[in-house]
Each structure stands twice: as C-alpha cells, then as structure tokens.
Amino acid sequence: MKKWIDYIWVWCWVLIVNEKDAVILLKRTDKCTAWWEWMRTRPWWSIKFWETITEALKRETMEELWVEIELFWPILYLDDIREENWKKIHWSTWGSFGKIIKWTVINMEPEKHEKIEWFNINDLPKNVAKYTMHWIEEYKKYKNI
Image 1 (cartoon, rainbow, N blue to C red):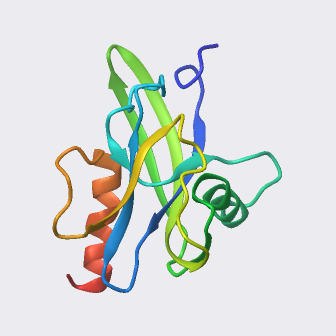
Image 2: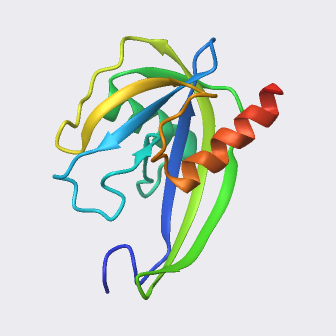
C-alpha cells in the first residue's frame, strides 16, 4: 500500500485567527517532500489512534507552533475525494477554528515550514491551498466579513 494513496487518511486541522481577523498560514519548505510543499496552508495533522479530534488539534498545534489554543467553533467535517496526477486520493478531514490563548508562535518544524505568518483575512497571498481557502470562506461567513 502506498502512503497517501491506497487508503483513507484521517486528518485534523485548525484555522487559527486573532481578534483582528488575521489568520496564521504556513509556507512549506522544499525539504517537505509532499505534493503541497509550496502552498501556504493552515496547521493540519493526522490523528493518532485512541485520540479525539479536539485532543489532536491541541496537541499538534503545540508541537508545530508552540502555542496553546482554544477552539471556538463546532468540529467541522469535509471529505476530500479526488484524482490528482492519475492517483485517487481520499482524505477524511475534521477541524475547527481556534484562537491562541498562551505563548507566542514559534516554528517548531523548520524542516517543514519555511515561514509562519499572520495575514489579514481579506489580503491573503496568492498560493493558499484550495482546502484552506474553503475554510477561510466559511470563517468569513461565520463572522459576516
């Protein structure tokens, strides 16, 4: 079985926003061998066996950005089923919106992220991943922006 391809992958993500409606986006490095390496995206991860989605979101945010978050939206769900480069992909993705409640953002995985930056929700870079833009649009609806 090939990683990312031959089975359903269960992911979680969090769109971190602040009181000014800015979002944190991560730019992948060329050392990250995954297909999304040059896109700006939000923090996201796989869920460990016997771990709730909420636990995974909080744990991985701490491991990746060194911040503690509070979730403020019910858990959201999206199936990502597509064919890309002649390969079938199926990701089951769970997530939420969150805000930082403790510490400052630190890039804990520089081998994966070239940059971690705040962006105004109405002034985003051009290369934001489609799946990230989907949830940014949902957040804008939630806030009537």
